[in-house]
Image (tube, rainbow, N blue to C red; front, side, top):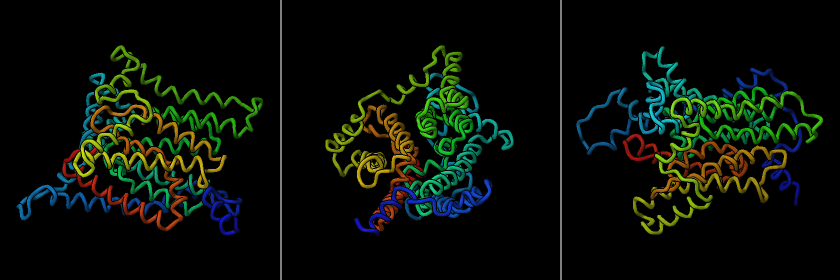
Length: 408
């Protein structure tokens, strides 16, 4: 291996040596202000693109030269779809049936609180929460990757996540941005050894989605690793980990009080035909449906979109685990979290003609995959092909969403 190859591989997996760490030479607020400024142009550009497409979506709804007019409120209502109605219903009326418990409480609680200064506009409250959390999510992800790898990789990571096909859900009243932002803050705190902060934000993530409880895995690993796996080095702050599962326990207690079933949030998945299955079931079923229904038909194309949005993060996790592009052992906690989240999603597929339905949206949680991709993105062909293909698919899915077609 020559010097250039060594340098390239070292940069791919993290900085070779602590040259000059900008984070250590600036104040706490200074580094976060810098991160905010770095992600702001991308944040604005994505919103401008989404606004333009929302404005032009009427052209896809009517025949040519149709004398139709739209309003600003009508444009906003294009984003009022599907799961948004569930969150608004919970924010307005609390949990009225077992199936509503599939949606965890923090997001609708925030919508309820913000609706008061907004004159009871729950949907607008949800939009504001999601889009504010989106900015926080990008800034924390940028700072995490910048400190642990390098700034170039940080820029690519936030870009690649932002143009992933399912990223359209960042802009509407879904829990994606809130959950990922809380998860990233918790994970950042874990890597820094701020155990109580890590536990508090993991607790909040767990109140947003049940998968937040899996932050306990990197928490445990990092706590021991940072103490050289010595039992005698364990301190009282290890007790903070109890906060992480307490989020699910607390919601389970509410479900028991309300419906006499502490696990109603798992039983509610039956409503969406989600059934515990082997990890390979969803992929095998999707490929089977594509082959039987036809590669070029509606069913085949929709399944192909879901397959792309699920297979790409999986391939990146594999590349980050084994082979020449794998992350170094000090980044094992990234992989532990990524693999745990992926397995949790893939073992509960939907038993319909679209087994991977909604899975690409849940793949947004796998930020380690996008960090691995950012390393591969040093190759110009990888960079251009991913950006253009994923951005095109994002455009297609967003157009479908805004024109009231089936997108989940």
